[in-house]
Amino acid sequence: MGALGACLLLVFVLLRPHEFLPFLRPLSPLNIATLLTIGGLFLDWMQGRLKSLHIAQGGVYGAYLVWTLVSLVVAAGTSSLPLLGPTLVFPAMYFVFVAYAFRTVGRYRAAMLCLLGIMGFIACVCIFQAKGPWECVLLDEESRGELTGKACEHYRECVVKGTESSRWLCEKVGPLGSFSTDGRVRWIGVLADPNELCMVLAAAMTFVFAMRAPKKTSLPVTVAVLAPFVACMFASGSRGGMLTFAIVFGVYFVRAYGARGLLLGAASTVAILAFGGRSGGEESTMERTETLHEGFTFFKTHPIFGLGHNQFTEHWFITAHNSYLLAAAELGFVGLVIFLALVWFSAKIPFTLARSRSPRISPELRAYGLALGVSWLGIVVSIFFLSMNYHPVLHIFFGFSAALHAIARRQDPAFNVRLRLADWASLVVVAFVILTFIGVYSTVKVGGG
Image 1 (cartoon, one colour):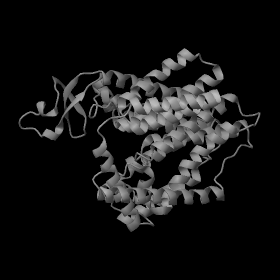
Image 2 (cartoon, helix red, strand yellow; image 1 turned 180 degrees about the vertical axis):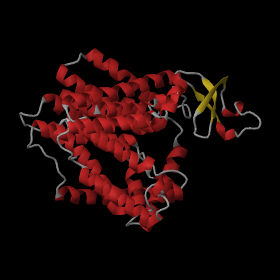
Image 3 (cartoon, one colour; image 1 turned 90 degrees about the vertical axis):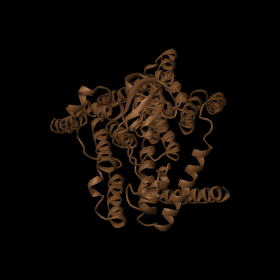
C-alpha cells in the first residue's frame, strides 16, 4: 500500500493530472495521495514489511533541515517559518515517503516504470506542443493559461483593450491545455521550466537502460522508448539539459562498447550541442552571470548563516540559477557543505552498489545502481545551472538512493555506505573550489562587461 500511495504521489506531483482534468481539483488529490502513502507505510510497518526505519542519508538530511531552520531564524527571524511548507516540509516528506515505500526489488521496479511512464507521457505531449500552432494565451493570477484559439505571431496581437499586456502571451499550444514559453516546450507545475523538464527527462531516461539489462529488452524497443525523450530534449532548447543527455548517453556508450563507445559518445555530444540549444541567449547568459556575482556577494557578506532559507529572491529579482551558490548564499558555508554531502552521499550509494562484487547482490539491482548513479551524474552537472534545492524531484531522487541502499542491505547485510572523514574533508575542498570559481568567473565577466 505504501508503494501504491507513493506512485500516486509521483503522478500528482510530476504529471499533475488535476491541472488538466478540472473535475479532480475539488478532490485534493495531492492530499489524498499523501494520506494514502502514510496509511500504506503504517500498514506495511504493522505487517512487518517495513522492517527498519533507518534511512541511509537520514543523519545528513536531518542536519540539513536543522541548519536550514537555524540559519533562517538567525538571518531572517521567525516570520518566514509558516511559509516553509512548499520549500522544506513537502520535499522532506517526499524524501521520506520514497525512501520507505520502495524497499523491495519489485517495488523499486514499479517506481521506475511509474517514473518512466510519467516522463514518457510528458515527452509525447511536448512533442505535439512543439509542432502546435502559435496562439494567444491569457494568464490568470496563478499563471495558468487560458487558450483563446486566436492565431498570432506576436503577443501584441493578443492584447485586449482594458487588460494588462503582461498577462498575454503568444505561444505554441499543445494537448491538454499545455503551451510553450518563448517557443520552448515545457510541461506544467514543477516541470514548467524547460531546463528543469530536460534535467528530469535525462535523469529518468537512465532506467530505460536498467530495464533492458536484466531482461535483454530488444534494441528496437529500447530505441522506441528513448525516442520521445530525445525529441523532447531538442524541442526544449535547454543547453544544460542537452549536456546532461550527452553525459547519460556517453556513460552507457563507454560501458557497452569501450573505446568505440567513447568515440560514439563524443560524436553524439557534438551532434546534440551543435543541433540543439537555442540561439540568441547572450542577454540571458549575462543576466545569469550578474546573478552569480550578486549571489557571491551575498555569501561574502553573510558567510556563516547566509541570507536564510528561500530569501535569495527577497534580495534579487531572480533566483541564483546555481544550486551550489544558492545553498551558500542562503545557508552559508556550513549549509553548502551539508548540501554537497547530501548530494554526494546520494550519488555514492548507487555507484558503490554498481561496483559491488558481492554474490548476494542481484544483477538487476546492480543495473538499477548504475542507472541511478548515472542519473546523479547528470543531476550534479545540471544543478550547477539550475536552482533545484527545493525542487521535489531532487528530494525524490534522494529517496530513490535511500530505498536502493535498503534493498542492497536486505540482499547483503554487509553492504553499507557511509560518509567518512575523508568524504567530509573532500567536500570542504569542493565547496571552496566551487565558490572560488564562481567568485572569480562572475567578477571578471561582470567587470569586463
